[in-house]
Length: 110
Image (tube, rainbow, N blue to C red; front, side, top):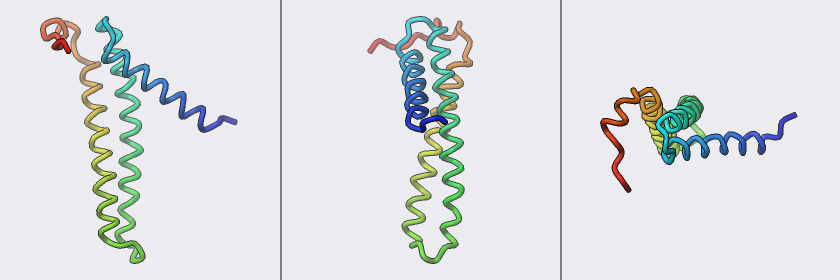
């Protein structure tokens, strides 16, 4: 019923718009909302990456797959999952921060 490519493009558009609103918005409410959207999407991606990393642990039992290849794949997948969890946490804490903290600690000019 749904075309997977269209669903992927829709999710990608939501993440990009949320990112632009979070880091380029002028109003703190817009930045906070965009950060929440990005945090939720990063959290969902972190859940999927973590599940994929955990499912890869079964490859250590399979004798047909070389140990070093399995270890390298597991390290890379775990690093991706950890990075996504970190990004989701940072976005969520920015979204949940008190608005008065934004005015007392403004972002540096770039």
